[in-house]
Image (cartoon, rainbow, N blue to C red):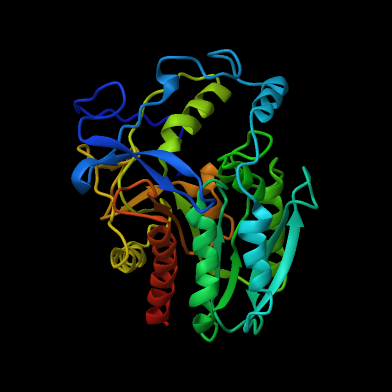
Amino acid sequence: RVWCSWTVLVLSLPWNSNTVSCFSTAGRAGVAGGGVGRIRPKNGASCVTMKKSPYSTMPYPVGTPGTPWGAQERVAWLERQSVKRSYEDEVVSKIKALEKAPGFEMVQYGALSCNPEKYPVYAFKSKAWDSEKPSCLVTGGVHGYETSGVHGALLFLETVAEQYNSQFNLLVAPCVSPWGYEHIQRWNNNADDVNRNFFAGGPCDECNSLMDLITSFRDKGTAFTAHVDLHETTDTDETEFRPALAARDGKKYEEDTIPDGFYLVGDTEAPQPEWHRAMIESVRAVTHIAPADSQGNIIGAKVVQEGCILYPIKKLGLCASMTGAPYCTTTEVYPDSPNANDEICNRAQVAAVTGALDYLIGKQ
């Protein structure tokens, strides 16, 4: 999810101590096979969710309310984290299975300094890289807990990527944040949001390794035409990650809502409405599109067209900004919807990428 820490959204909806009245509690088995408590609209209703965080009535368990964290608090936060699934078993095994895929070359472009042997990072590039063709980047797992970003990128490679090699140079980095993937965390091991640190000299290995990879292509004359960054918006954004962000930054936590459905976050400086429309139509064949709330917003930002909001992505240090591509966007799937499951979310990510590429083919 690509929310801003200063955004506050209030809806006049009836609610009880757990949810608004149109919701019920259910579970969804994740890729790792574990059940996770979710909030579902009853009878398949499509509306925003208000998942009640325990930290709406009690302080976050790290730090002092109102005081930004220092090094000691970040260490205390890290000590609370634990491995919940296996990067090696669930991701690297699939990457290695793709190593001999026709048309693509696997490259290891770095490793996380917290554990280089455990957390290498990989990408796939078109073997027949041609300076005459447009180049497109697909990234997943920038926020490691957003599962379909990772497995959607892998599914794209496993199923349809090869058919686009004749039209594009493709570069796919399926899991940018392996520590976050294993720990089901938005942040990295230093409590930094990877998707706020794509700028020169930033603190995150995840960002710096990927930016170095892009620089290596740029130094050889590659200018990227498009970048699709695959993400999710989840209930845990509201129950855990936004309260943690408020605590880390010494701010007051304000409750927010979660949109039910798929949406895109484009660039304020380069909106590309027709490209986004093509992506939305492609995804619509797989899953539902998030509606605007009663104020015409999604996560506090004005909906500029169906399923699309805009952010100043360079100013915020978002991954989608790092190539400077004229076509760049962040996808957002809602895996906790009663109308979605893991397969649907992964396929929706693939549909977003193919919709983006098909539009560009039509423009050539």
